[in-house]
Length: 213
Image 1 (cartoon, one colour):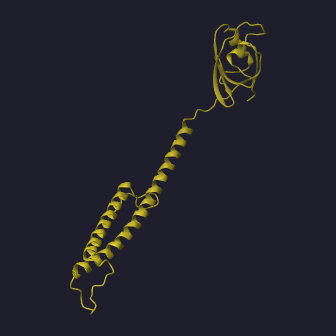
Image 2 (cartoon, one colour):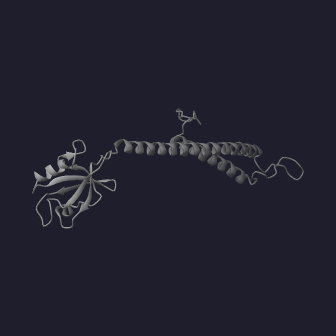
Image 3 (cartoon, helix red, strand yellow):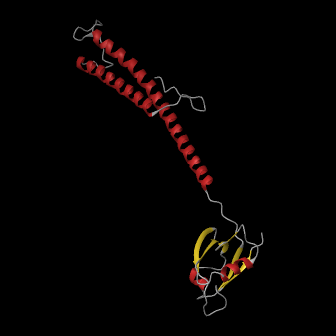
């Protein structure tokens, strides 16, 4: 059978499911032909091994010798064809499965590469929270000890110089919510923190220290 004219990287002829289906159809046709010839022998009552001569060694006159010999010969040839096509089917299935496996692995590799290409690079934090007072504005906003800050209102990694930058934003934002972005266990988290008067010191109720780059 002529396989699809397409070579893979190894130089082998590519096999498609249609190729396999054609081989299977040919196998079925061979099996039908073999069965038909067996039916001929059964009708004659001799099978594939029954003697074609009588007790005296003469050709039997009660059967169609030509028909029997033709059926036996064709069965033998068709059985050889059947063995050959079974080998082709096995090889084609092996190539097909190998090709599909390689395609799946390629698709998975491309998907991983695409995911890595689109992965957002984690920003560099410039400050870290090393203390939060319970009941404070910072505590109520969800700020936790260990949070690494990479955006505090208008202050970000690119324009941060020192803690006075944060203090200035806090003083000018009393009663106004500030967007605070932190890294917590390697995951980006965004919170809304409103500087305001409370029972403790300051407007936040947390202690922030710079991260030395």
